[in-house]
Picture: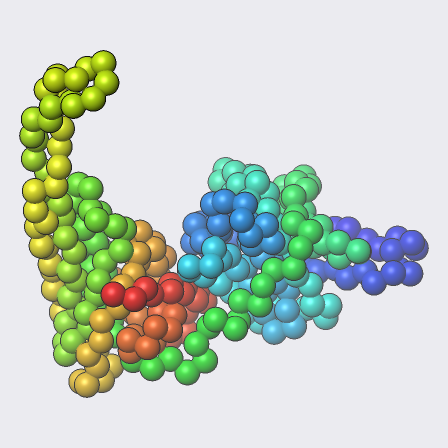
Length: 288
């Protein structure tokens, strides 16, 4: 474990660490890591935040459209709160190092002018690349008092999403969901193409007939699954990205059930979590 030097003791230096089974840390990272941004537009968010707080230790990732926060140690008491954002490259190296390991590991972070982190496992130290930037305040987007709750069978919901994603050349990656009394319905349109003869009217190949394709019509597809709605008066419609929706369900499924909160059609973030769960998963809806 790292120790403070005399030079570090004269400046604002904070240290924090957490020790846990390698398997648990790997499971948490695999649930949170898909929410990291794929591009470099938001440099300070291109990684996973390790938040050593006074009440708990969490890892958080967000790309602006969805957010995942996992509590690693609910009862951890960190005397010195510290935040370190491990870069995408560092997260990949961390997952690779944990994949073939058993037993316990330690994540240690140090702040002295900038945050640094390292993985201590089996007597070896793996430095982790950190981002020199402030991670946004993720708690501001988490609904404090979510209104409108529903639950359903995860297999039925995933089967409906897969039927949409398997449709060839769907108009977009978004699916319109409608929450009604006792059911969750989805509607989307799949284009049907046809070939036609096109005669080139200009250029060197003028007069040549070639085969081209065009959209003939759109085929409407819908599926409905039974769901338990928190209130009988709940009736709303919202849009959501199909891939984000599928990832959220896979990450938060509890005993074959999926739980959604803040489903009220207000345009606020949809919260995927169950009571007592250590994972908070949020997806921003879209207007339909």
